[in-house]
Image 1: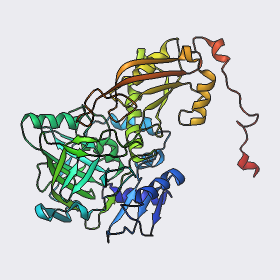
Image 2: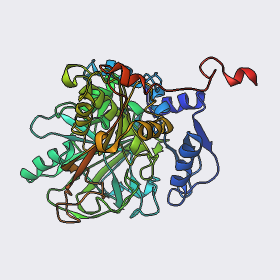
Image 3: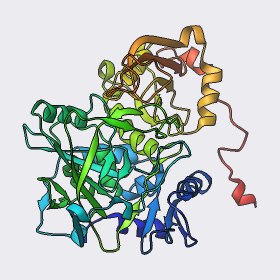
Image 4: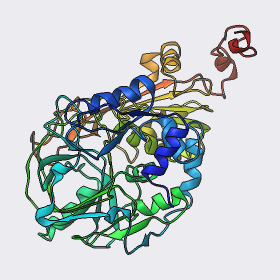
Length: 469
């Protein structure tokens, strides 16, 4: 047996990282709020065993939406996540293995039998236009190369066989969709719902255009991903997923989509005329678990899935700035509206190096980062108390803060002005970015650096209060 959502749920049970909820919960009323509380009050995933209006169904939320749980899925720890991922990435893609069938083919609905309302699709926020699928890993194929691409998007429930789609402008799915529009052809698409976190991690990664994310998932898992052919589209999907939704996106056609509370915690950005998907088939396990991935107000799944892959990419980018950077860690702060604030921990060697590092952080393959903060080796970048202490005691604003105007911003960051017509696809925003140097003087200035040596409570480094209780 391979690793799937079910094997990971067992891991969470053994690690006491999940709450089983036996009382009746309504996907359209309170599932989202209970799931949000499970993570933000108890730091645990939630497993809903009794869904109102959906007999026989269960749902899980926040399975991967936590640093500790995502690290657990890859048999590592939060602190070792970056070095572990750096080693896994060195493997490169692992070719998929096509099978004749798999568990996701237990039940098959095609054509008129398709009914999305049979799925317990939940409403994530009080401001959403209705139920949304947040867990659908969209599988498409580049019409030129034939290579599949996988990415995570929001999908609004519109009818029994129709889903709204928001594609991020300039990203791989949008680029491939434009190729189909040039051909005046619909774009085949399949959505895989519910699987091991490694699949979601790779789906949210920014790999090169010609890399199939599921082949990277195989490298993360340590074996080839087993796939099956779709029923109605020429695509391969994971054989051990919980649910597959097949269909196509018509060229040039747009209709109203949204509002939807995105990773910023706001709902109106991104809403407007967006493409939509016509569903042609649904296949699933006979006892499928619906993966109610939660978006919106931090901490939600989207901030973790966006941020942790970003940390690895930024680490690799920063470490070679100027030849070598003594970098220790990177934190895409989950509560900062979807990784709009990045903290880089490193030991500066010479004057000017901090600004180089901050500029590299703000001009990466990602457009999320809006504020980059550099901290020194004695400050924990994951501890907000430490971060604010460093900013308050090591930053002279006129010297240590800079702003770069006129930069490309994330299209869902509504603090930035639109330069395209509101409500039209795609939306483009221009804004600015900011760097903050909260480090000590560099090692090349030892006396000045020594003046910023931290104090600590006497004995706190040698004694543990637990030994006195």
